[in-house]
Image (cartoon, rainbow, N blue to C red):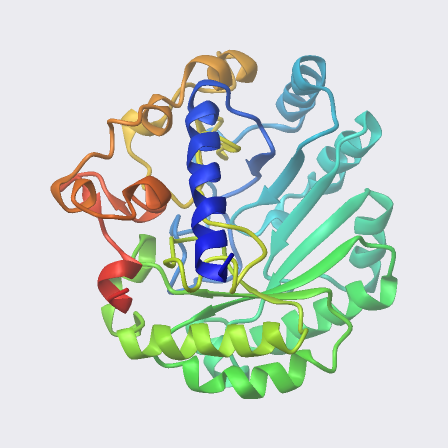
Length: 359
């Protein structure tokens, strides 16, 4: 059986499995957006975080109640709490909330810009039971600082990364890099840096046309940039380096399972849900924040009830039916691609790799 035939078989099986997930979703990742406040002002931020909190932010005591409910309804095994923001470490009660989650038995990991992780904080994260962490490094020093609009951000992020490595005891330490048209020339130099650091993986993703990034269309990758990016990832993976592309986007039969360890499936509402900083319940936090995509609020709704009865946009196979997708030979494998790049006003994918790469 050729590699292409085997991949088609696997993707067909996944397509059939996805049909079951539409009826019986399985919670694997529950995101807590602890804050919309951030000490950086990144050009690519999907939720446009920055100075100041969202109104009516969930309190410490409310998080305790939420965690108690989730443990009662789902247990603490088989899924992970994914902690994000904004910059989650800006919450003064961060360690109270996550220490309580750890005490209850939850597995949790965090996405952070790393700038606030001194040696003491790294140790407190270990004591609070953090299992995984992803730190954002979006280019060499000048590029990173300009992209994140933060003076000295690169040095502080790299110091935070090293403090976590020195602390030890974490299950997985990852670096995530968002690649732009301006930074793609820095991939080889970044590889030289990360190859000398004791990280567990490097996750490389493209700038997405969402959130604040819509203000900077000149930073989006060109088709040639995408080809160069994917060739870089494949080359390093073939050499055994723990590098992967993100979960976003169907890449076609030739590249599927080559740039990451799995085949594409959008997890939103099927494996993934989120509780926003103000308590709103939604799917992936990168998806456009529209009223119709909010399925309740944790202050008045029990998450279990919302998970079982909500998320209709993600579980109705007819929702993302458009002329371009319906005519596509890969429709069963792609299913309209990622929800976070779906154009809800024009009802079409904002980004389609088949159109970009011409496969």
